[in-house]
Image 1 (cartoon, rainbow, N blue to C red):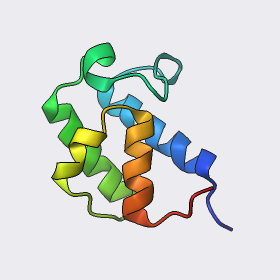
Image 2: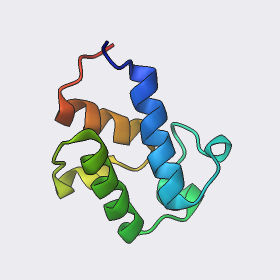
Image 3: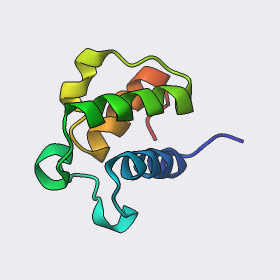
Image 4: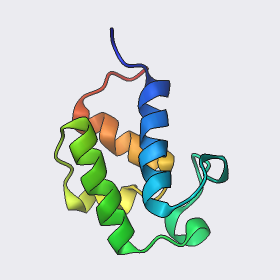
Length: 86
């Protein structure tokens, strides 16, 4: 059974919230990690590494500039993992 977009997005949100030490209700798809949640570059690297382990992909560090919120993270991961646009 294929994993849906919603399931992937939920898993990404879970990982991000765990690393940023936030409740899932506090984080929106467009909320900026740095400006709104106080994430620094070290946290961004942690998020990148956790996503690579969870989804079995390698994400170029250059993509971090696009990974400023949940939607950006999802977009980069979808492209990297080759998920079909749904």
